[in-house]
Length: 449
Ligand code: SAM
Image (cartoon, rainbow, N blue to C red; front, side, top):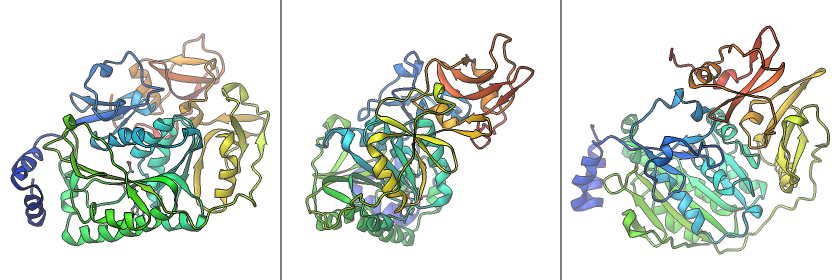
């Protein structure tokens, strides 16, 4: 591993006698970890017996790196592949003194591809509202795919610059800024990142983070929390911003971390993961609470009317709880969305560039309808729907968008394909043939037969 000399010098100063252990750890292979979806992952899976990530009850260390692309459970959203250190957000969220989750507005300001957002979604577990924002348009499809797989309806994806949120006047109870950074913490996992590193680039990152934080600090509601994280060790991208945040009307939030976890506490409210001390990659996080009153606040006076649908041809496929509504939309025919957040969505539609909201249910085409893949992935599917359980080979065929040979007993119409009882997507049985409705853009492209 050819590390930049300036990086080596800085780490030696930062870590003193520990530096040699740090550099040695960069030559070990990175641990492999996943975070399971508590409402999807099979209870009987062998991975459930593997060691848990200490700071996240849903995190599991695997003994080797499987080919995730070929695992049907990965495509079903039964787990998310995530490096272990960043899962500490799960522990931190549980330490915050927030009001009941049902009232929480959570913003993930730098969200793609969705690691922190899926963690936040699991934590909310269908309560409150999550806004996953990504400013770079080309990174939206991956965020959308991961959001769809995770299956919750209380999620909105926006494609905005952080400054747009100030203009929107919308406020949030928790804002997570997982900032774009120099990526030093990923040197071991992704050696490419070493080539993108330069002193100039770290300086650019510092300035960009400062700008993002200028917006983020404005949009936290008084009494709400700001979580600032990076995957770098550079103090100019990490601790330097602490004072900026505090000066914007925040106080540090002390997080009690068990000493056995060996996480480096940088200050009362900030911590750093190092690969020679923790089973994970480099990660920094600091936690703040807003104490300054907000100068302006959105009033939901002039709102769009969202059209609530009471009967739909595809209603029998959905299990719609009382606190959820079906909403008519332009491009697709309907989405499932939480009742409590309809006004919020209507207001935000005029203020932000919303690229996804709720669960797309399906589309009406003439006299017929097409069920959406998002419905199959969602937690709102009617358990009574016609299902065909397949083995791993057939699951891979289905996920590669190849045709399946169906048993004669399978009725005509929509069939939910499942693997280990977890839905993978829709197939339509036409009798003499079947249509595999797995989305073209999500299909397995790798050769595996
Ligand atoms: N939170 C994500 C996760 O856990 O999967 C990873 C986020 S990554 C560290 C930082 C993100 O910030 C990237 O998706 C990047 O596109 C986005 N970004 C880049 N420049 C930005 C800017 N000026 N403002 C806001 N976000 C930016």
